Length: 210
Figure 1 (tube, rainbow, N blue to C red):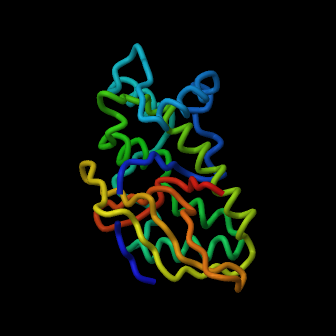
Figure 2: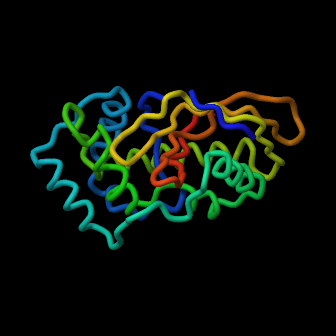
């Protein structure tokens, strides 16, 4: 596989089916639809608490701290290869390991994200809930469409240049050229943003348009 890179911020989402225990769900139940619409449109979510305090409370809601990306890949090609093998094997556990954890979101992704700063200031708990929900939907759709069949990726082309946010490089709008089950070549975006940090790569989320 060859990596071409063409990026703009598309909040492309986090974690697969294993994230349902997120404490953000309780906080977000009544506001989830609003947050999905506003954040997706690049808008502002109002809050009476400063973002720093919301982040402190969010981090306090779970155990764990992240200093680096865990179970990450050494390149985009390696990450997408793992993704294709997980779909072929119908292995949701393997797929979960390639996506940001809650701790990684809280300590590594969110503090550097433009969505944490004016004019957006999206609350971390609600943004996490949105990331999880959209990523789960994308993962389920990908398994429904491609699960259990050989998936071979010929090319990966992400938008250039990568979006730089602090220590993170975000590779967005990645288009794959691939075949599934021995069929004809296809081109599609089948996952969301890829985060690169300190030479390691994971999916921010698995959102797609399937």
